[in-house]
Structures are given as structure tokens and as C-alpha cells.
Length: 75
Image 1 (cartoon, rainbow, N blue to C red):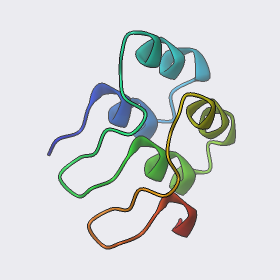
Image 2: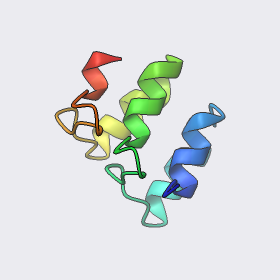
Image 3: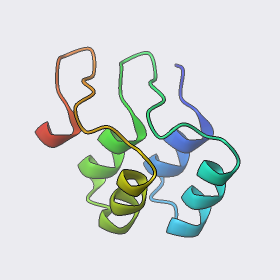
Image 4: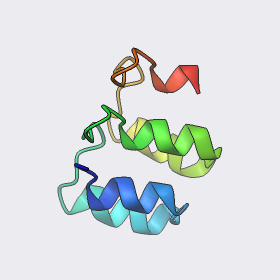
């Protein structure tokens, strides 16, 4: 399904520390899965504001769309 460890961490509402560790280890804040979803899509959908902020500061691009043409701002 193309989900990265960062996607999985975002799906389970991981802490800022866990997501930060993945980013520091080289995870891309803009990685996409087979549906075109980025970690930011998942975080916004789950309303995990602290990690959303951290991903934005790490370069997550809010303009990237999933396969339905929806950006993270849609969610």
C-alpha cells in the first residue's frame, strides 16, 4: 500500500517525539502512499495539531493532492 513508517505513525496518532525521530532519520514529510496520501493528510484528518505543526516546520507541502485531487487543506 506504499505506506511508510511515518504514515503508520501518523495513523496511530504517534507523539511529536516519535514523528520527529522518523523525520530526523530521513523520513520524507511528503512521502505518498498508493492513494497519494501524505502523512499530513492523515494527521489533519485525525486532528493531531501538534504533529501537524511539526510536519509543516519539517517541509510538509500543503498543496500536494491525493489521487482524488484533495490536499491536506480539504480534510
